[in-house]
Image (tube, rainbow, N blue to C red; front, side, top):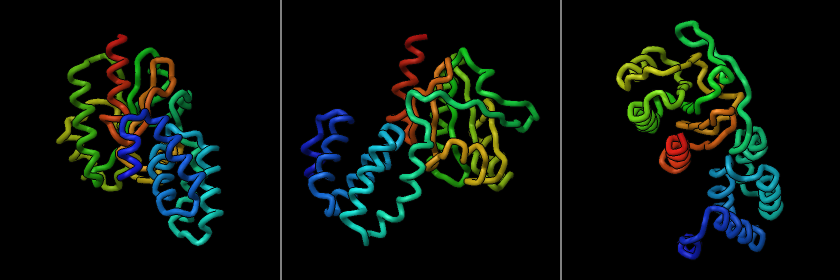
Amino acid sequence: TAFRLENIDKSPSEILEAAANHIEQFPSSKMSVYLFKQYFLVASTTVDAERAEEYYRMLCEAQPDNLRLLQWQDEVQRMGKRLVVGDTIPDFELIMRDSTLFKPSEYRGKPLLINFWASWESESSAMMFRIKRWKRNNPDKMNFLSISLDVNKTAFENIERIDSVTWQSYCDFESWNSSAVQQFDIPNIPYCILVGSEGNVLAVGATYDKDIQPELKKIIDLR
């Protein structure tokens, strides 16, 4: 609470530096472990992977018996593989349920919003509702692709029917083992990747209002 109050008016980059400074000064404290999770792991799509690994090693050396830190090892190692703002989205192919082929390169010229979801994740419905509202209010201004981590076909189809999903949708019913999920190393769901008209990543994250919507507004305003 004291840390939050001290940094309440600072920018995200300034808060990150404050968290980094605390970790450097007090690598043995529980507070440093919390700050690492909050400002390095949770914000992994905006933090340099090498820097995150550096602070992670610092904490592990100071707290070698901390099981919580050890549990994050795989996640920290994967950070370098995750798409971040400024990256170019790799071209991939997905066979849609109607047997058509989806390739991001064929959708250049318009922004593309990719969202990962599942019927068994409660927050996914809220994300789908926001996407549907955005699409309804801004028709023909961008493309959409939903990738489901469902394993139950009936549950998947029911949610798509209830939420009136009329855009491109994919599900291979492999959940976290899906090739699409593993290719992008999705850390959790719901999760979105906003791609610009030239294939560059503009925003990524699990929180629509904070991570995605501000960049969406910029696109629509510019167009």
